[in-house]
Image (tube, rainbow, N blue to C red; front, side, top):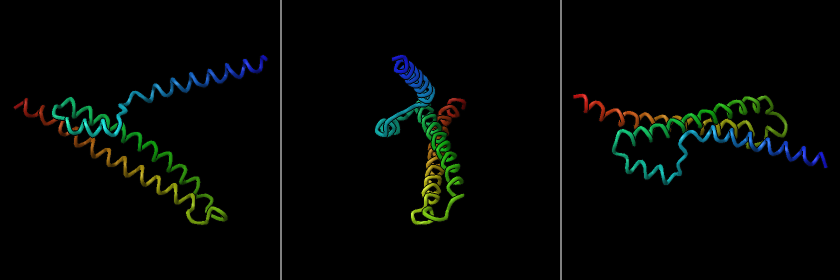
Length: 129
């Protein structure tokens, strides 16, 4: 009976730690695809452009982190390319493709963020003149 209580306490502690870790990650804006499209359509002020830029920067950093993780997996898998791992599709190819995808998406998010950052700066330049 004491073992059951200890296991329950350990699981509860793990869930609490996981919840606080999740709360730290949710500080970045998290919008659905429809919400982002609506924000893009309706953006006309510098604040709206800054909100879009911060969203795309957060997405860029997320994809960069995923790419870094996948690069490590790619390097790990490239150590073993003989035997069953040599058959197509090889696990190393899958990791390389995922790394390429995450790198591409991070670049696209960076371009979007730069675009909205430039749009948010334009009204400030007009106000100074």
